[in-house]
Image (cartoon, rainbow, N blue to C red; front, top):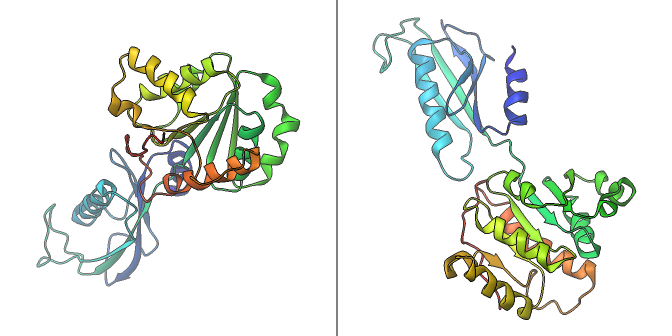
Length: 280
């Protein structure tokens, strides 16, 4: 299988990787300029020539994968002589090669909207212009009709619709680091989704629409379920940038999307639990 076919499979499976390219060869080397190799945390696809050269490149790539944030591309020049450092064995082809290492984090940020009523649809319309995976979840099939969601499909977002009378399965299926906004038509559904989300330690922004009174009731019920104050601090409510007085769906959607942006487009794709604070 060719390297770009492996790349397509790995990105589809959302596996972070480093693309290693042999960009320049001076003298003799095991492979020609342009040879490529993909390195993940657990596997290597393709080859740039084997031996010390390749083992060194794999080590550099995996160190790059372990770094937080999004590292800039790296260039490395290695000599293939008896005098060159050779931690993994001597290669005495006599040449010199330059490698380019580029980290690829293929996962689009995922935002799940639970409840696609007036506000949920307006929020989806705002987010649909962004390069995200947008999960739209509702227990009412009519909220997810093709005609209703058609305008969302003209943007950059990857749209996934889930008609889920029982919502916990969708919460459990969310990729690690996903962000979610809870705004269903039913407060019992809201509480159920919130409880399932708080049982996962690997989610990012957790937003809940509603008043201070609604949150006070939810807090009491969640604490009775065994959640701690630290757990509840992961919830952002009310949602949206402060100071927005309008209750129009479009205004709430824009304010919430603006609040989400620092989480969606952070440098690291993996969200850290507990960053969002409760607003009361």
